[in-house]
View 1 (cartoon, rainbow, N blue to C red):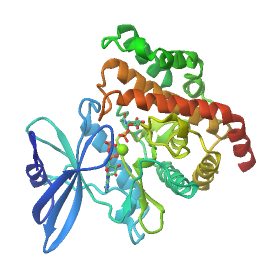
View 2: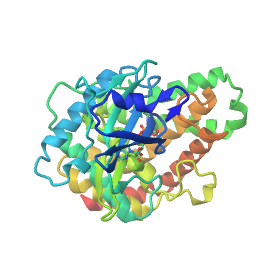
View 3: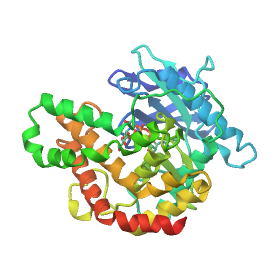
Amino acid sequence: MKNGKTDIKAVGRAFQIYGNYVEASEYGSGHINDTYCVVYNQAGSNVRYIFQRINKNIFKDPVALMENIKRVTSHIAGKMIDTPDMFRRVLNLVPARDGAPCILDDSGNFWRVYLFIEKARTYDYVKSPAQAFEAAKAFGMFQRMLADLPLPPLHETILDFHHTPARFVAFEKVLEADKCNRALSVKSEIDFALARKSISGLLVDMLARGALPLRVTHNDTKLNNVMLDDVTGEGICVIDLDTVMPGLTLYDFGDMVRTMTCLAAEDERDSSGVHMNLPFFEAIVKGYLLNMADMLGTSEMELLAFSGKLITFEIGLRFLTDYLAGDVYFKVHREGHNLDRCRRQFRLVESIEEQEEKMMEFVRLSL
Ligand code: ADP
Ligand code: GN1
Ligand code: MG
């Protein structure tokens, strides 16, 4: 496929892939990288691979990022040596011809290749509490397996990624500049954000005074970053490892609440279906705690419900910030896309606010 300047076949030649190139197509619904499904014929069978062009505007040091991914995937693979389908349970990097985990093409873009995980898929919105349970269990297991990752700490691939107060400052800056003249038309969203500024710092302040531990976390635990088996529905592989780095477990748990308790898509325009559904929350708590209960401290447990509200607010704020800035960060596919996403997150924040007590009660009963 030659898509503009993208010659996927030439990219593939730089990796240790056997067989004849067949075809390539854009793949998935991620907001950041460019992902392709690429097919090779290997001695009569078609075999799929995932090719990804790393977004260099967002990831300033792709080499450090790939070093993280290599360490994380090797560590997990090391724990699965005897697991029959281990190649479906952890991402497998295909090395470049020179053995490196990625290549730099002539246009200055970094590419990596993964084995395609077959007979499993990701979902853009949640369908049942059972599915939420499976996804949360997989993310919990992922964190558990990384708890003993040897030092040194992983590289911070995006600085202050889940520093909600820093996200608030970024929002205030673009609001002040209002370079696309959009602020007037989104006054109610801006007011919504300003009214909740006070919750922004709660988790990072606790971290700063040692009341919450820094751990190895995924930092992008949305539903479509975990692959569920087509037959059993089991969460088999956590993917999208660009932001695995030191972080707070609560932001990981919170993003599950954001993406696995609401039946509406992340960019749903019709707000009538945007609710936090308690049975889904309960399923996430159960699934996550199955692998993490003995590792979490009391403060982490007590803030599980709050974390869902905070990150839903943070991501909504990031979508609003990007809308005001002129859609420069997240991929958009229609006019007002970031604004739709923001509204959907903020509506979910309200729904969580209405039910936070009940959510906390459930967590307490689970202890
Ligand atoms: P982004 O950072 O842009 O979100 P992801 O790494 O999440 O990119 O990949 C985008 C999508 O591609 C995923 O949601 C998933 O559906 C699919 N995908 C990614 N890696 C694999 C893989 N190894 N096997 C099969 N599908 C994959
Ligand atoms: C982005 O890469 P993707 O689409 O899985 C973003 C996350 C947001 C998410 C919102 C590196 O995730 O932080 O929560 O969109 N990733 C980055 O859907 O910014
Ligand atoms: Mg993704």
